[in-house]
Image: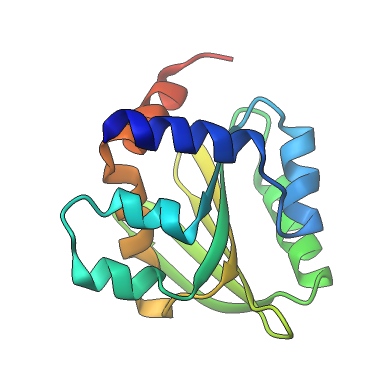
Length: 165
């Protein structure tokens, strides 16, 4: 099962398209960033414990792009520009919170296709979850924690965080 997940993640990573132009531009600028792409079925595979709460959490996610960018060379002004670019795409700020040493900023876009941006900051990294679909605002940190704690994905995130660029 672990190898199936790894193969699927690799396939989805290689075939991914960004949901928003801002995320696409960010990924092109920071091409060395860790980039993962998930469809709803891929997210279900992460749920190895068959947690019904997690299944309910992801039920309205069609697809999601995950970027992890090292903050070396990415400062406060860069973050403000990034948020401004998301706002220019009609994303509206919905929530700001702090969880386990990370700042979470959540932006939503309404329309024919719902969109959600979750920007997560800590001392060393910027994480962007660009979601087509939505999740309940009070469950954003649970989604991030579950992805971070997933055996295969968590290992890739940890390896990337330790790797010097």
